[in-house]
Length: 236
Image (cartoon, rainbow, N blue to C red):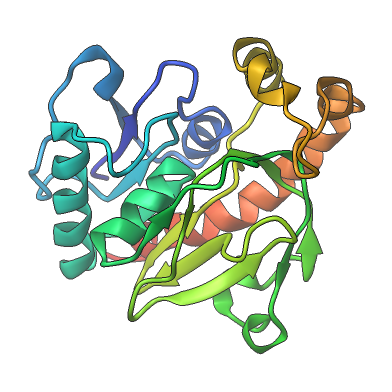
């Protein structure tokens, strides 16, 4: 099987549980470390799918790799190669497809519920999931739904939390988190938690019963990641 190519933008936002899931399902993958100065390969012939991880930068930042990744996303979706974007990666997908990225200084951090609209609850991506569930969040920017895409989820803090287009999916929240990743982010980005906005949880609330929260998160991740890899593992 051709590998999945994962783009990492900062060293603390790697594949996490996604890597574990792929290994458990015998799906090979490679990580392109943009944070180490690796350029964006545009070749699509030798991969099964593309994943774009998160990062603290903005999609509108004048960085060459951002422009290159958006071009790659457009080409992959045009060629029906499955793409998955997580947080910044989801914003890159929206921007690449003509969507708008907006900044909200209030941020959304911690364990907040997301909900599916009734009209989209029977969408294939949402089957096997509750209509409302609680993933992990850490973001300020948000995206609009590009033309041709279907919105899947929203939260009280953000209008759009996920969309799908063809065989690809963009997810604003983080399903890839591990216990160690959550603890590291709380430490590294603790200044984000000093704000008093209602959608920013305190560090103690974030790590309370963390093992149980992560176990539940991975159940949701198994559904999303499982449906995504079927886009190439079920094909000859």
